[in-house]
Image (cartoon, rainbow, N blue to C red; front, side, top):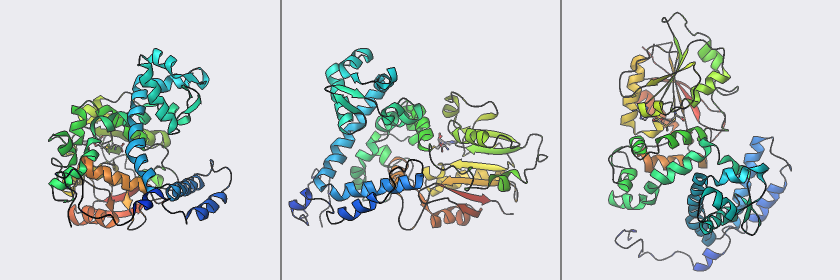
Length: 425
Ligand SMILES: C[S@@+](CC[C@H](N)C(=O)[O-])C[C@H]1O[C@@H](n2cnc3c(N)ncnc32)[C@H](O)[C@@H]1O
């Protein structure tokens, strides 16, 4: 069977397996009436019940997929969504979403906004027209638009940061992935300096170095802060028992200034700050560690949290802490690099006392959630790494790193788990 090659510009010798009529008929017309009935059975207002809201949203997506034709899906993927990203990024950078939200969010004439933000009015009208056609702002009259919750949220740094750094320094790795795959004979990427990102951007730098070199490091830190918004957090009731596992048994005499929690690769400190806010009475020091440019880019952080420049491949300066915490760090790296990171933590852990909390996805063997698989795709193209299954975590942490998984805590499918780890003597 011939392969889709760069030489042939993607043209393939293989014959289609269906007639073109399939591409212009609904994907699953037979399923649509059943899904419509399921949707009708939901309560009118699900806004206060997050599980019901998410379930209804999934059904609504099922309905769209059933009714949409393959041709429409193709145009949505390749033109509509792809075109929406530059339109949104441009409008955010120009300050258009602030303008839309001004004066109580009354409808605004696009050329008037263009004059204020110093943009060619024809260009801005076309950008806003597409964003409106996609439903992200509302068209109220010709060339006149009203903001939405989405457009207003694009005035918040943790929400807009990703719209800068992904197109600016990351998405080319997705765009060129097929070329990279061909060149490497479709071997799973596993080298940090020769993956799809390096191929696409002609660099040897890893993602984090590349982001800082291209000036997008700060936006990426913001994006990480946005990703975590609205998700169940490990320190909330019903998830990980902070009181029993961390607070009780905290040894305030273990050193002159004992540490409760050190967040390794903690970016701008959003996790440790959440811990401080939600657990204000816990004893001990709170520390955020990251590379110097990241620590240096922190704008605001409560004075109780210590900022520490640290490279996690070097000796961990904080010994015998009650909690070493890592969020979305190990998924960034292939096993070999994870082992280097884990070995530094293991050296610093006090057996029977210190806990390592790894806050990551644990992919189930079937029925993986789309946000998790999307992140896994990002891991492949940006970092030659992976989201891991339970078996892959056990193999890495126990068999290879020689630590012990005490328990995996997870409130529901699709939510990052806490893998609780200890050092045994
Ligand atoms: C995916 S981000 C996760 C950030 C944060 N833990 C969160 O969940 O929002 C990975 C973090 O690892 C940091 N990092 C990368 N290489 C590092 C290194 N050698 N030493 C310390 N931190 C590093 C990055 O700067 C980044 O902040």
